[in-house]
Amino acid sequence: MTTVVVSTLLVVNRQRVMLSLFAATVATPELAEKGDEGEGVTWFDDYYTIQHLDDRTIAIGEPRYYQQNYNYLILGNDRAILFDSGPGVRDIKPVVESLTKLPVIVTQSHLHFDHVGNHTRFDSIAMIDLPYLRKRAKDGMLSLTDPEHLGYIEGFKPPELHITEWWRPGETIDLGGRTLNVMHAPGHTKDSMILLDTENGQLFSGDYLYKGDLFAFLPGSDPSEYLATATTLNEMLESCTTVYAAHRLDAPAAPILECESIEHLKQGLESIRDGKIPGKGLYPTTFDLGEGLSIMTDNPWFVNWTQ
Ligand SMILES: [Zn+2]
Image 1: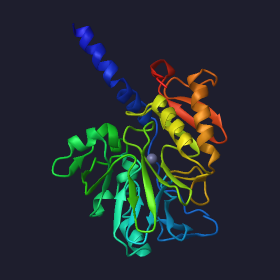
Image 2 (image 1 turned 120 degrees about the vertical axis):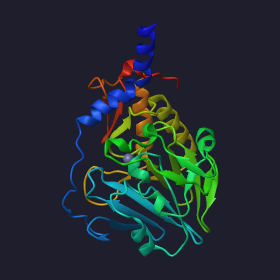
Image 3 (image 1 turned 90 degrees about the horizontal axis):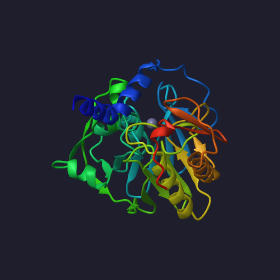
Image 4 (image 1 turned 90 degrees about the vertical axis):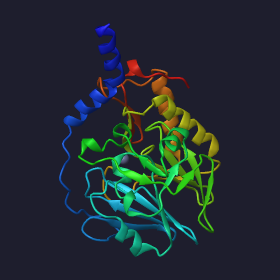
């Protein structure tokens, strides 16, 4: 009996234990030196950068933070969205207030600590409307769990968020003269959300897609769902769509990917599923997809492909 209980606990907690062991090998580095960010990028202060991608889309960068986060301010005529608020190493609100007088609603590509760190500084917070999250919210207050926030890795406490809007997958958000489609994009996490500005050919991908190691081995990650999301995206996108990602590998400027990267990711995931690409390492296992993309999954023994 004891063996059964211990084995069950080990299976249930295996991913968390493995992640903690992995995290213990990676120390959080100090802020990097200010680098050359190139033309069109200005420093707001000694931490944040500002880059106008067009007259209604602004990247707010954190190039000195080791994960090099990029948050996006998406402006309409009547209101604005702040898509991701960074790890909260610094207050992002003065940056946002310097860029727009519109009412701003903050939302996130997903619930990891490095994307919701400044959320509680804003009065309006939008959350993807997934039944399990809605069920947990009491009087609009949603507490994040350790496995979905992961802040314990760097000493950040999970916040309690006052949700003022729930955005259904498939819903269109009207900012006044500009609309964004909400897409549920599981794979990196269960709560991942992509925003699509179809008219302007823009896709805000969060951690679902960027150059470098994509993380599909964390609690809530699922390579099979990663592939399903890529397949849906490929079918949905009628024309070339620029991808604005949440992290970058190197300077200068915001991480922007060409539209072909979505198709490339889909093909890469299919190749992993079909055993055509060799993985490196036991946990996480890294697969090189080419074109600057790679993905880290749980050990292939534990990956259940249903797509
Ligand atoms: Zn992230």
